[in-house]
Image (spheres, rainbow over the protein chains, first blue to last red):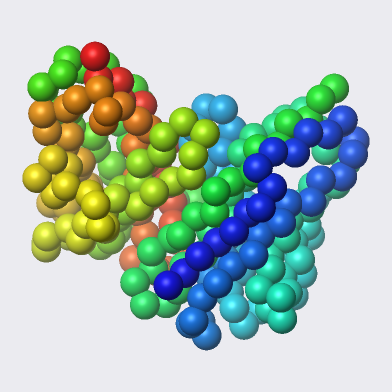
Amino acid sequence: AQKVTQAQTEISVVEKEDVTLDCVYETRDTTYYLFWYKQPPSGELVFLIRRNSFDEQNEISGRYSWNFQKSTSSFNFTITASQVVDSAVYFCALSDSNDYKLSFGAGTTVTVRA
Amino acid sequence: GAVVSQHPSWVICKSGTSVKIECRSLDFQATTMFWYRQFPKQSLMLMATSNEGSKATYEQGVEKDKFLINHASLTLSTLTVTSAHPEDSSFYICSARDDRDPNYGYTFGSGTRLTVV
């Protein structure tokens, strides 16, 4: 069975601080895919990144960066120099190559204060 | 990019009535779509997997007779909440998997906020 754990329920920071969101996953599959989504107050899910299990390269996209460590089954997400617009709920998710169902973590609510 | 249109965005209905929610992939074909439910301050819970031309697969604990899913074409899936009750009030969100890239194409609709009074 797949499982995604986001241990941080809420994080509150002041603008320009860095924020790191933790994600730990469990799966028995050797081929799987990891995702991060942002859910602003409007409710829609905004896709941020996908990683497959064979690609352990870290990635940077603007102020966002991701650290994939297969050895610790973690896929952490960092927002550098946070802004008020980054305030949202962030979900980590996992799917395998069998049924492609997405399993979501509980989500981390990020609040960035001006 | 891939776009999924979901409507209505919000709906208020009386207890005992039925509500239909549509999920449409606008620029790609989706043999498979997924329906999720999200209660306030909680995560997304998968309700069912919708497959074009065949019956939906429901997750454990989801009543198939209450949440009717129809995937009539490669671009449209509908979720009907039958005989709605206040406890069905929730945020329902669909996602469509792009047939061109099944490993990647999870595009989500903007969600439907259902309130049953």
